[in-house]
Length: 575
Image (tube, rainbow, N blue to C red; front, side, top):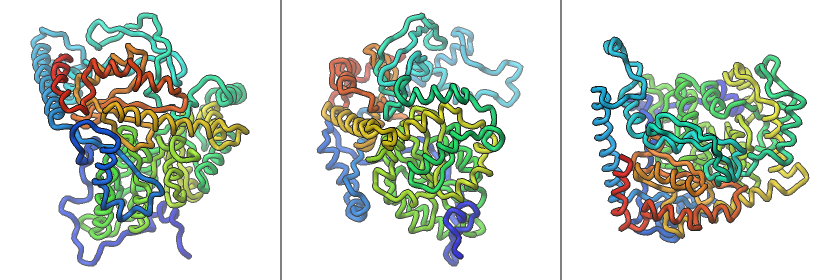
């Protein structure tokens, strides 16, 4: 009898044998992983318009489309413009100046001329192993602290399309903050992962969650294997499996732990993990905790992935040349920092060709992509059975918390007894489970309304409109044209803080991101589009006078190649 694929995945039955006489690579089994390393694409210089970007994309992937055009039912368009050389030089100059001034300020702190606000070793501890890595803390002390006011802003309302912020001030250059007692009202929320607008305190979902709180209470105080298994949990898992189109599913109380605690249960010593270089930290942690060999392929690069698969099968394990017990490919549906969508049809084709297993993280894509909101599998019209492990979270599109694993029944049954997140973690809160059930039924149309379908359509329209208007205004944005995550490039270190502050002055809440979360020359603002956003809100953010005047003030329209010259003073402004 042929063993099922799930049993092979769990028991290590699928082995990848090296060819006779093959030798292992000299560098062994594990390649060092660089989380923020990024594949570079050739991009045109000058002001970018959608037509030029499309032609560039066609040029870049011409051979790829010719070979694999039958895998895609519609054009697969992504935008990745290379940093203009002048902008890159000015950005490096800005970081260099900040670094020089940082060392100068550290010198002043060492001589007690300037007060040091961070933890440091005492004089009597100088001969011990340092508790605080000086190089790591250097960035925090001298660069991050200058723009720290752009993060961790306290919210005092529902984080829906609009939100209220607690006003705070600092008198010591962002080392400490004081609340003024005032509230900044009706800030347009362009940073939350509220893709379908279910982060709300009114409506059917909120009412159902409140009713569940009255019946079950706020917490369970036990694990699923002991006294914490409620009927709501089982109802949720049956619904998730039906929504995904798989045999079974399992829910977890924390999305991060869904990855970091389940991957070690699936792979171990003698297994090989092939991970996209831009995978989330939870996937990276799970891979490292598993003890498996890890090799990293370039982001969304199928040639790089196939080369690693071929080499893994030909060479086998290092030194012994034994076949790998399992080869597991880790990818995400939508990459939250790039806004790109995984080339899933090609990944599945390679997975089948080389008899590997596929772990798909749909944290950002579930509910946000596909005609039925079922994620990237639905977006490409693929069979869910072609994905061995389907993972996702309830923290984005469903307005709740936690995560899930879906797949064959043997897989889920195995995880119930071997996953640390299932055995030791407290089970999901009942009102959270009810929120997920109510929102998922709304998406599926089982609530008796068309609200879910309307929200999916509205999200798609808002995404297309927002991206199109930014392109028409000449700004450099990254990602797939259907992705609700829209990164807009800032580049300069000074612009990270200045952009966030100027937008907040105009009642627009944004997320700004810089090194080390991105490459050093690719700082950006990240917009997350929601179905709850109205056209007026989007116009306020990208078409109206508020955003435009903010861009003109900071000199951010760098697609016009002459304008980076006016940005140099802002690299010095942060000093």
